[in-house]
Image (cartoon, rainbow, N blue to C red; front, side, top):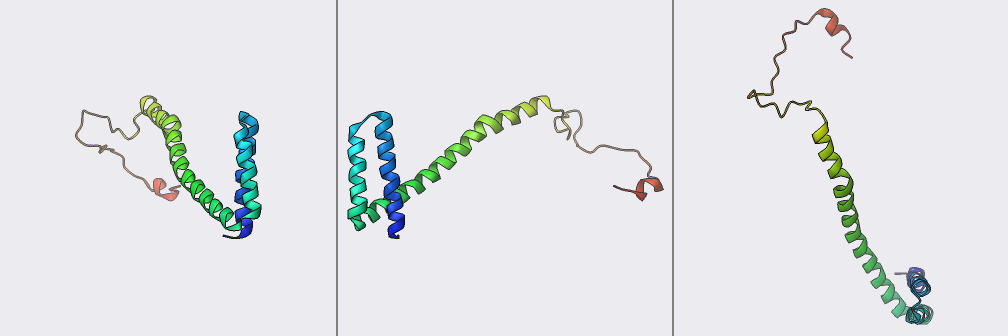
Length: 120
């Protein structure tokens, strides 16, 4: 990992701590942010290790959150739409037709030459 990438990660950690300190009014987060900023500037190996840990954590969170969001979209939007369409839409494929044993529909139609001239 390059020094620039580790500094970017440390800056993100410092910014997150400072923002949470302001929003939640917790002084400890302010001190943690200042400590992380000092580590990022003065200790290259430690900041590289923290940045590597931060990137691993973000990758794991991305893996989990994407699954959770896709599941929520499925159960909140797609499943109700499918159930509503099953209830209110006509049975175009005649799959629910119970009086016959086959889906085959007999069609007594004699084709003429005009039917084959322009099939589209």
